[in-house]
Image (cartoon, rainbow, N blue to C red; front, side, top):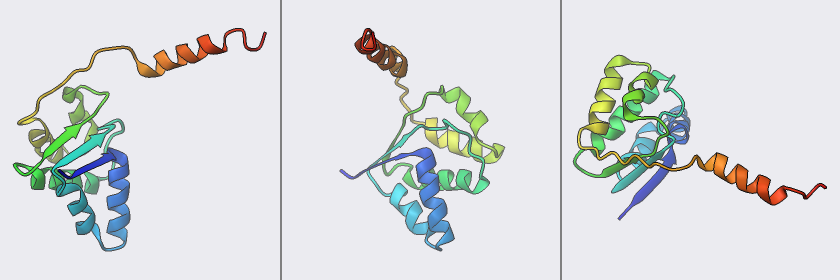
Length: 128
């Protein structure tokens, strides 16, 4: 099974560089073809560049029925819509992203706070 992992912004950066070099279709293929595509930090930041919204649509469209896509996000899916600059692209992207989706809401501690607390406990008294 082929797998491709990328943070969403890193994927866009790779595609934008390829676009500037005239290889955008090669870059889109690298994200469209794997059996499993994992997109991390999904919509952590808004999609500002309208071309990137189209790129994401094209990738999801070409993967439909061919491969699985996993989105890891700190936002609830109902908040994703607000992170896409184009209404038409937002509808198209989200229809493909959630149409056959299974949402796993992982409950638990905020790991950044948890590890900071552990580190603080370990350092307690160190400077005394």
